[in-house]
Length: 84
Image (cartoon, rainbow, N blue to C red; front, side, top):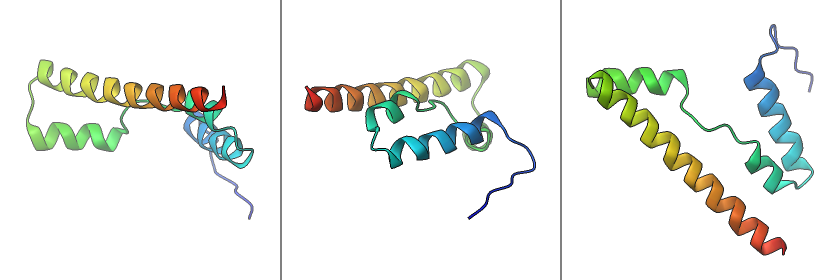
């Protein structure tokens, strides 16, 4: 299957790279390459649904990123321990 996107963006390159890492069974490397954050659509929805003030909005985003980071780091540690 040929993929010919009109624009090659950094997020698309990251997705392609992650697929290749998974194909090669490089799970730890894929986790280390994981993007942490929120898509624009989620941020917009969060702002619209919750009607947060500026400080609450920043805190909600920060909390989400920290939760993702913690989960990814825990997974990396488990996998590295398993490989030792």
